[in-house]
Length: 140
Image (cartoon, rainbow, N blue to C red; front, side, top):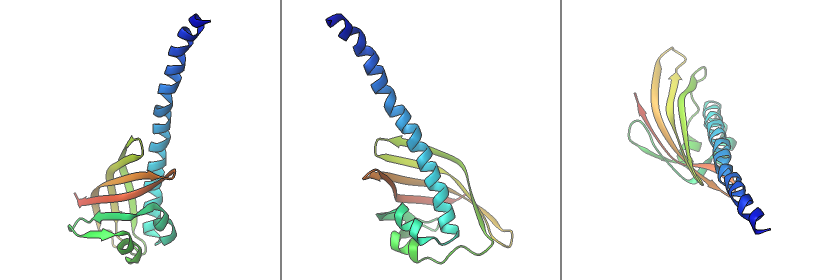
């Protein structure tokens, strides 16, 4: 009987150790989706989605170097009608209940003017839900 336990232990350990990798992949997908949801909510001034996504402690550093809170973001005017935002080269790193996403946000104004911003967003998981706690953005 003891021999079976010794043989089964490595198999159980392998399955246990593989679970976090699968969980991390799911978390990475979830963070990518939240980034897309965030862009859409910003473009359509969907404050309900922004309230759920942004943590109450949220702080953002804008390309001009100013700091904005969650309430600042919620009270900001909507993006100009006809403008677009597209995320590119988004990479996500997950470490337990913390994650970071970074990439590019390509903004196109209705008049055709374009701007590219590099961004980094910090996420934390609380009560099973991911929330953004901080953002940094700079114009490229």
